[in-house]
Amino acid sequence: MQELMISYLKRDSFIHEMTGATKLICLVLCSSITMLTYDTRVLIGMLVFGIVIFKFSKVKFREVAFVFYFILAFLLLNNVAIFIFSPYEGVKIYGTRTELFKLIGPYTITIEQLFYLLNITLKYLAVIPLALIFMTATHPSEFAASLNRIGISYRIAYAVAIALRYIPDVQRDYQDISFAAQARGIDLSKKEKLTKRIKNAASILMPLIFSSLQRIETISCAMELRAFGKYKKRMWYSGRKFAKKDYLALLMVSILFILAMGVSISNQGRFYNPFRVQ
Amino acid sequence: MKENKLLSVKTIVAIGIGSAVFWVLGRFVAIPSGVPNTEIQTAYGFLALMAILYGPIAGIAIGFIGHTIKDITMYGAGWYSWIIASAVLGLIIGLAWKKIRISEGVFGKREIVIFNIYQVFANIVAWGIVAPTLDIAIYAEPMNKVYLQGIVAGLSNIVTIGIIGTLLLTAYAKTRVKKGSLDKEESRSV
Picture 1 (cartoon, each protein chain N blue to C red):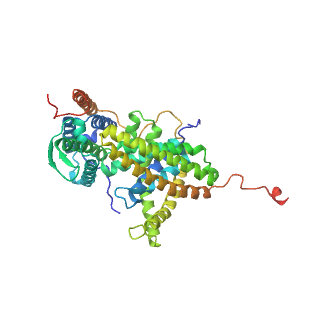
Picture 2: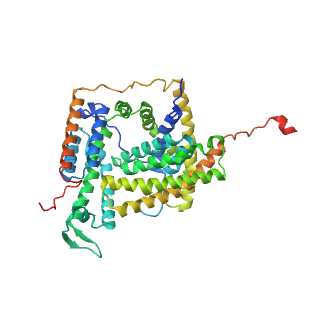
Picture 3: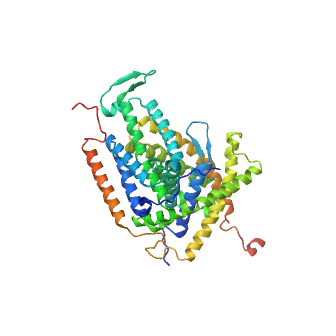
């Protein structure tokens, strides 16, 4: 089983040196920008900003390339689906209709639709470099501390920390169980019929889930023994104090947020419309 | 020590481990159903089990955290419209928690019916209303596309949770000692 997932990469960059809380707040602000606005200029700006920061983080593109290809494939499928279901969504939004050429049946390609699809693609894509940086530059145990720092109850932060800590363990359990089942002739691959496959999946699910429920008992007993949850607050081993660059980063992203919102509001509506006759 | 009723230590750990298992199942134990882009997601059967065992808070949190980690490690970003739908699904199924006394080993016909009514309702709300509405609000996607996606996802999840969730709960109930299953010797011998 291949290890295809995004995880922390140790690098010597100022982005890695910032506290997890700073990076989390910046990411939340930046994703709010891309979720709220539909302004092409803002979205392109965010994408460029993300790529520049990505360069600074010293993470190499090939280390995260597989995720990028996943996303591209997803976006391509999504765009085709949108076009099939609603070929004139862009015309509806922008209010004009400039036909390029006729495809088959009711499908005609219009500039407005292409522009709308470009916007959707940008909207999904714009935050991805930043999210990738966050994932590769924040250590999981610092992540929990930073969740608590931005005001989320430490109980929930601890639950997230447990999830990140136990993913490799549960994954190993799953592999052990699945190999053992396969050795006994329980097939999960395409060769089996669908109903048989579901049944076979269930036979792997049972031991995995029951061992996990057992794990919950063990861990919660251990935590109760150590009086987890007695106090209102809690310290974090990997929590760090804010430094100058943290305040600077926060200030910069806040300004970016205000700017982006200003530009979006000046559009009279959520969409930037280059087709409107002045 | 005063126990925090809403979020006991056990619930916190259940959320953590539950999210990890949700992730593993979502990554490795999804069976293609034959319809493109639709998989039989065993993870949702597990989410239903956890929601019944540990309640609505655990349901909402496992749905949210598990799905977020899955999206982020796979695509680098979260699709919040669908993540929130998963959380809503966990929450609504979790509301049946008090009605089904699974920890006492009771899971008969009546409980199966209650569980399935809740899960069908939860799926309709999550995939039929929450996910498409948010898709339109956040990403301004065309209406007919997102509703069709929602209906397909909802139906496949209703079937998945109906089969796998019910199987898991039945199996879990069998491992519990039934309340009052032990008799005093005198009362038997008479």
